[in-house]
Every structure is written in C-alpha cells, then in structure tokens.
Image 1 (cartoon, helix red, strand yellow):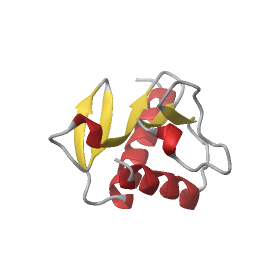
Image 2: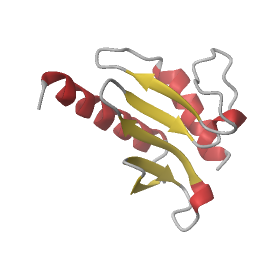
Image 3: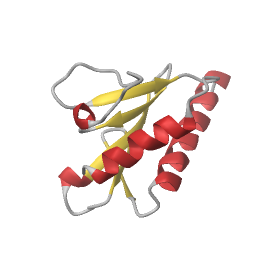
Image 4: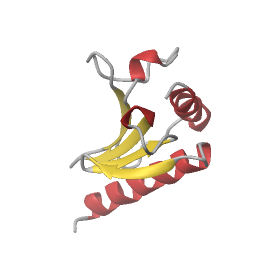
Amino acid sequence: MSETAMDLVALGNALEMFVQQTVPAASTVSKYGGLLFTLKPEKKEGQFCGVFLSSKHAKLSFGKGYLLDDPESMLQGNGKYRRHINFAPGDTFQTAYIEMLIRQAAERS
C-alpha cells in the first residue's frame, strides 16, 4: 500500500472518529463502500452522514446536505439532496465548523 493510500485510510479513520465523538449516540452501518452514521439504524432515512474514501481524498457526505446551514460554503455538490466535503491528506479543517454541520445533520435526520 502506498504512503498516500495509508494517509487516506488514516484520514478516513480520523473523520469517522470525529463524527462518533460529535454524535456519540450514532450507530454505524457499512454501506456503499463507506461507513454511514445513523441515529435510527432500523430506518434508511436516519443516516445523517458518511465517510467514503477515493484514490485522492476522504469524503464526509451528508445525505440531506441541502438542508444544512452552511454560511462558509464548505459543502460541495449540486445534486438534489446530497452534499459533501473532500479532505486530502495533509488538509486541515475547521473543527468547530465541521462539528456544527455534523450536529445539524444528526438533528435533521
């Protein structure tokens, strides 16, 4: 495994831990090639965010991202519902802001 791939795995693991620390009541579901977080494991609609890896970045994805208040315009995507933020190895991110987005997503799930 290349160093970049290991960095991506570490980044993905860090994002997963961050979501779990932000919403400790969340359960996880492995699906769609990533890890989804839900407060309602028996319902698909309860999945509020997920972490997915690609060859170049880790993605924090929000299934109902279009509902989130994002005054700093960090969320990407122009689909009907889903929004995401991509993180590359070595990126820094605004912890408090990302935490706010995750909490909003959980509250709206």
